[in-house]
Length: 417
Image 1 (tube, helix red, strand yellow):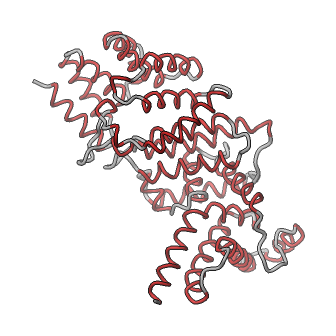
Image 2 (image 1 turned 180 degrees about the horizontal axis):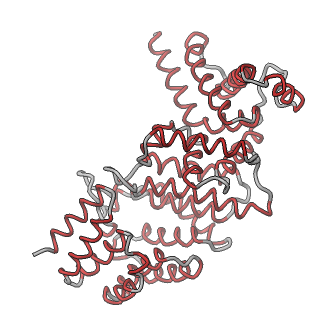
Image 3 (image 1 turned 120 degrees about the vertical axis):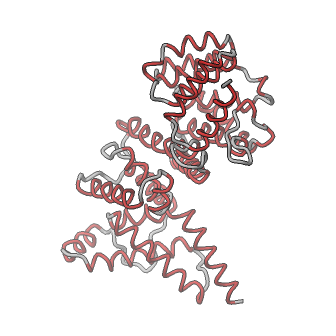
């Protein structure tokens, strides 16, 4: 029985940690005004919970219990710091340290805390890699070594990145608040960029053995949903669009690799393995996003929706996809968008037409392995095998992911004599 109780407590704490870490940290940062103290106190509170809950049982409000315990741990840490009297005097005068035994645990207030934390982690004064790392640590609850593994950097490097980010927030006096309406549009773009970068690293890992890192995809979707929920009743259209886009891309996760972990192209995927529940959730969000001001995420989500709505690859509405890429290219001109548009045109017109468009992008995208891979695929379709081999070989020089490398090597063998 004791073993079962211990197991129940361990599972409960693990669940609370994963689901409520961002909520707890956001509240503590508001209370103590220090990222490091908030983190250390929260970790200590979870350790105390592991011991006490086994003998006293899991409390009715476990998250509130953690916050209450962590708050007192944070005060203890502040007492041990230098300039203790000045800090405690300031906190007492500010009213941030409640005198009651029960913690402040208003749901709406905590939602605002998390929103403040998201905008603080994604402040444009921080380097983008610091924004990503800090968001995953403070809101996602990922450990430093987990984040380091995800982005294939040493743990010490990631730890330093997090330290520098927190120091920058402190030294620059970055405000812990949701920006006002005059700066919200610019700041929400930074938030969404960070979330999408996290998703993209999970969807198509830059380096390493695995092509897909499901935990990063899941975490990015969770963060996107959180931002959308916290900004209700009228979340910006681009927030809704990003959530829809990530859901649609992620819905194909199980079909993107075969049993050996090798890439399966979209046209060859078993669409019965696509996550229909995610698709059903995403499609109304796409429609909602398109009713607002048109943005790049909404157009990308609309393209992904057309792919997901086609029961077979041959039924894909490529003409509509080309039209959407036309809009996207005007709204957000970039060589990557132009490359994707050329691939879509190859399905509507001909590979030769698309190759002509790609030739115009050659100088800009010569260092991008997917440009050479896409060009090689079109050359293979028109039986220009020698040129295809050259493009596959160039892509292999540039690729850094092992799954993609195996795919390109296989394709290269297929077009060689």
